[in-house]
Structure formats: structure tokens, C-alpha cells
Length: 203
Image (cartoon, rainbow, N blue to C red; front, side):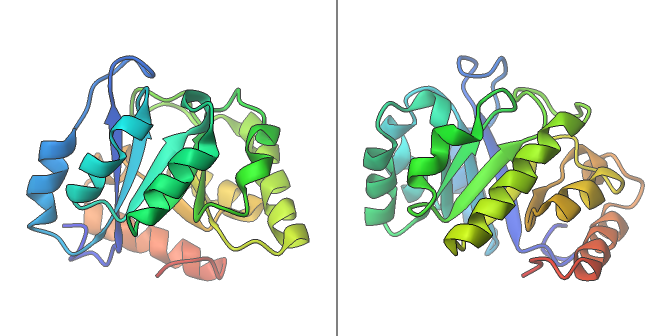
């Protein structure tokens, strides 16, 4: 459905029941579906000790592997490890984590994921207090001439998406608003139309 509707990415939330209070898909599921899709697999590791699982997730078919800064003592090591495998690397932060925690690695990552809900469960309400963090990160990107994807995940729907695009996001994660809609393909197209109106990243 996603590919037919014109999507280029599938965002995988990998949860271990420890870093976040839920358990979702793992390596076997991603590896199995990799055989059936040519889409970009954007794998979001909401797990403890993500450095131990980088290689298996790469071998499962991940194109982007994103770790949480809250789970890593030495982010440079996991960044180097992911890049050496030929996979793009992302770093994620939860709403309560200050942006300053990732300042030192912004020039080393391909993607920064800002959570706009507390991670663990889908269908949560968007936290508007995170918007200034998105705006600040966008400003830093311009000031430092950085070119990573600024991804936003959590409570995204056809109303809140405009807020994060105005703030500076150029990649969004939409789950419940698509899968719970009456016509998922139409909803995806509406997202794309909104992106085009903001001249944002839609490829």
C-alpha cells in the first residue's frame, strides 16, 4: 500500500520493552519484509544497547539506523560503526532531552529525529512544547551549513504536520493518521500535497 501510494520510506519503530514500555517488531520481521519491498527502511531503535544490534539490523536490510542519544555513552563509536557498514545514521531525542545533548555530533549524522510524544505507544497526542526545539535545530542547520534530514515523529496528523513543517522539519513519520483513516492512499496523497506546498523534502 505505501509503495503504491507513492511513499519512499517505511519507518520501523523497534521497541524492546526496556527503553520504552512496549515491544514491537525485530530483526526477523524487517528481514522478511525487506524481500518484498524496495522502499527505504528507516529503522528507529528505541532499545537499550543499540550498538549490539547495529550489524543484525543492517543485515536485515536497514537503509537508515537511528539510535537514541539517551542510550549511548559514546555516540561517536556507534556512528562510526553504522557508517562503516554503508548505512546512513540517525540520532533521536525524546521530548525531555535537551537539544544540546547532540550538538557535538550534528556534523556526523545523516538524520536527526525529534520525538513529539513520549515514545512507547502509537496514537498519542502531539506535544506542541517541542516545536521550539525543532525551530532551534533548523536554525543551527542553517548557521552551520549542515544537511541532515530533520525528522519529526509523534502525534503527526494532517493538522499537526503543518506546525512541524513550519518549524523546519523536512521528513515526518505518520502512523495512526494513515492506518486508521478510511482511505490510507488518499491520506498519504494529502500529506504529499502539504509537503509540496511547503516546498519540503518529498523524495
